[in-house]
Image (cartoon, rainbow, N blue to C red; front, top):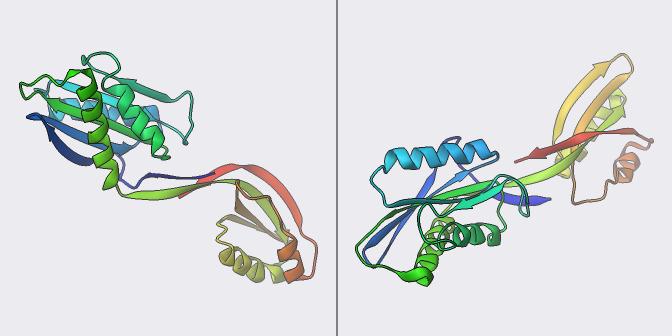
Amino acid sequence: MRYSVPHLAQNAWHEERIEVEKSQFIAWVCHTPTVGAFETLLAAAKQAHPNASHHCSAYIAGAPGEQNRIGFADDGEPGGTAGRPMFQVLSGSGMGEIGCVVIRYFGGTKLGTGGLARAYAQAVSAALETLPTREIVERDAYTLRLTFAQEADARAWCRDKALPVDKAEYDSAGVQLTIGWPRDRAFEISELENRLKAPITVSPTKKTRHA
């Protein structure tokens, strides 16, 4: 599986602001590979804006389609008018590992339930439009058993195929290269065997992920 995540440093966030009927909506978006990362963002937003009317939030602490490590909250706004619309924008973006807090300063004009839902969704959408991102590729790790003479060709083949070599272990018989194979592609090593003119012993190891 391949998906985009926010390209931000740990504990950093991306900010965008909109104004609707004199109310200020400040969207903070961060990378949330864990629920804890989202909780850090929410705490920072409350600390930075203690006098705001609301700190509404939504997050996905996993890949797109994650069902368990997700959440959203209205923080005092009428039920369903803030957190859920925010979550729907995050979910609809196709991104993963993403969390958002929208800080609202009330401007004196009530927006109504529909107006609130649109405003919170618009704030998140504005932040996503300018958010820097990077790609995550979920991979399965495979260990290739090679001779010393085969290593250079095997590494060159991996570079050609954009396959990361995660580890190399050497012993008297040769080398074991652990590579990361994209989980969205069927594993196929025959091309490398043809290049080396020899069969390769392969052992699956574990799941991994790469930026």
